Image (cartoon, rainbow, N blue to C red):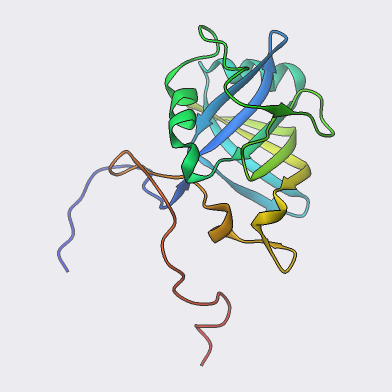
Length: 184
């Protein structure tokens, strides 16, 4: 198979499209992020790369709290809006119905099937982005997105971003059971 070089690029697939929530200057704010992932299982932690110029970073650093809200694919338009417009210039506090969990400065989006409350644990300046690592304090999930008491990605229908094409997409078909199909 012939390969083409593209130069240094962060091409990992899929990348989740999430809404990072915080309070900035006493106002609820959400930004869209695609560079987000699991950082640790014990204690559970999430990392998200935030450009240093982002308005949301100001709230995260001030309050040491933030939320990761996992939207469904049906929410693509609202998610894109929160990525296009900065909370510095546009009030995004009324885009979604909001609720508060254990952390008062980590607003949660009712419409998102999964909401994760995080307390800031570390930041790492990587250049254009600051890697923000939050310890998970609480996770909320719609009951309709559970199968046998466990989160079901098919029911969540998470919105994913394709960094290669710049498109929002859905997850595809199930190809096998993890930690099983590779056994002899």
